[in-house]
Structures are given as structure tokens and as C-alpha cells.
Image (tube, rainbow, N blue to C red; front, side, top):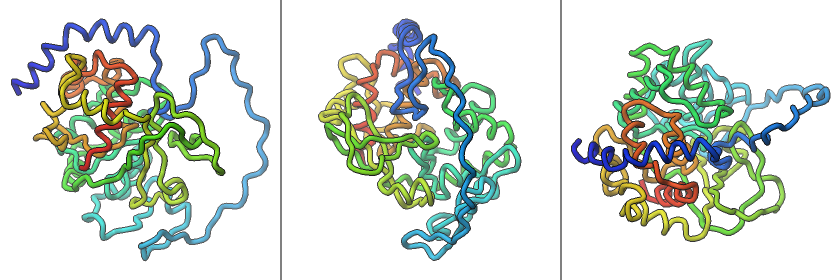
Amino acid sequence: MKRIVHVVVIGAATLLTASALRAQFAVPPEWAYGAGPAAPAGAAPVAPPAAAAPAPAPDTSLKQVPGSAQSFTLAQVRNAFGPADWFPGDHPVMPAVVAKGKSPDARACSLCHYPNGKGRAENAGVAGLPAAYFLQQLNDFRHDLRKSAEPRKANTNIMIGIAKALTEDEMQQAAEYFGAMKWTPWVRVVETTTVPKTRLAGGLFIPLDGAATEPIGMRIIEVPENVEQTEVLRNPRSGFVAYAPPGSIKKGEALVTTGGNGRTVACGVCHGADLKGIGPVPGLAGRSPSYLTRQMYDMQAGARHGQWAELMKPVVAKLTDADFVSIAAYVASRTP
């Protein structure tokens, strides 16, 4: 605990200035939040779309995924209060709150985070999180202490509603269920100068059909390894590839392991030398770089409060958007 308090003290002097600068001119990085480009200040309202053609008849055919003996319709796959469980043998028996949620306000945890807790790039991977940390985050959501710096980040707002709808016992059940699972490889980091052009689907970046590419710039573009398996079928065994700028992993290693000559604090001080967590402090290794960046930015911008967020604010106070890219690329590339 002394180490954690020391981290707070040495960074506190820079926190107010960094937050003020962030509030003045910076905007949340679009690549991490998946909310689309913000409208320019003073821009005219977008006209409503023309009347759409009648929706096609729903697809009621049974779908399958490789390696699963289960069959589900798309409606069953996307059922917010009882989504498909393709691989029941991959995880313990789910508590009711994880498997089915609580209608009408609390969707099943397994819809977005998957029954195995892996989650997707637009939300969070929760497998392996310490139960104490998991509960703290739910309570931060419940008490309006954890929000998103990007107000259009819809699933953060959904989580606030879910946390407020759950009982203490239901939160405990979910925390213990996901905390009992190990975090295993889920994201493959690839350094490259060009990336596929993408479209947004519910906050998730999806490569466009064809081979069109664009320069990566100072971004990480995290996309499904298999679009159909992730976007359509929500296959919890189909992971992600994260494209990062050349050299970002090495730059991130310097920041993460040494603190970058005072720019931040070595992550291993609190998260462990292998970044796999210590006690109630969560592991970082091998997790989504989009998610990691959102949390660093949210804390720097003052959108996240609560016990653990306050400890992190001095750590992220001086970081630039380029630093976020480097740190997230390195941490995501580590073997969990």
C-alpha cells in the first residue's frame, strides 16, 4: 500500500494541469471509443435519413460455429436476456444474472462479455478480474462515479443502468463467477504501416469487404479475426487482431517498465512485474488495447472516479495520445 500511496503523491502536482489541458483541446481518440467522428463545432444538424426500404424477413435458420454441437437462430444469439451459449463446457455453470440477466433493466452479462468473460473490443474482458475490483467497478457505475469521456459510448451508459438494477448478491455472484476464470490469449498485436479500412457496428470496427487499406497513423485498429464469427454469431472462441504502428511495442515497453523518465510510473509497481495483477489490482497483460486506452483516457479526463481511478489519475496525468498507443500496444502484446 505504501508503494501505491507514493505513486499518488509524486504525480499529484501534475494532475490538475494535465486535466485542464485535456479539457481545453483534446477529444477522445475515435479509434479507442468507436463512436465515430465528432461533429465539428457549429455544424448544422444532420438531416434524418430518407425512409428505409421494408426490412427483410428475419432469418430463422439455425446457425452453428466450428467446434460446437449447439445450434441457434440469430434471434437466440442476440437475446439480451438469455443469449446463445455455444460452448457450455468451456466455463462453470453460469449464475442466473450472467446467463439471463434481469428484465427489463439488466441484460445478461454473457451477452456482451460472453459466457467465458472474454468480451469484445467495444466492451470489456472481465475474466480473471479480482472479485473485489469487479465489485468496486459495479459500485462505481451504480453511484455515477464511472462514466465515459465520450458521451456517445452507449454501452458505458448501459452498464450504469445495469449496475443500478442489480442486487448486492447478484453483483457478488457475477464477480465470483468471472473472477474464477483465468485470462488467456485473446488479442494478437501486429505492427504495420497500413490497416484495412473499416466500418463501425455498435462500437466495433469491422473491416470493409475487399482489400482497401489506409495508413495506420497514430492509432491502434482492433478488429475481429473472423468477422462473421464475432459480429454475427458472437463466437466466444474467435478473438481479435490489433494493428499498431511500427515501433509502438518497443516504445511502450520503455514507458511500462521504467516510467519513461518521470512521464509516468512503471506499471509493474502495482500490476505486478508480469502485469498479471497483484491482489485486488487487476492484470493487464494480453487485454484489449482499445479498452485499456479508453480507461487511461477516461481517468485522465476525469470521467472515472472511485477508489482505484483516483490512484491511477497521477499515473496517467502526463501521458499523450501517442503514449496511450504505445502503452496499450505493449501491454496487449504480453502473454497473459
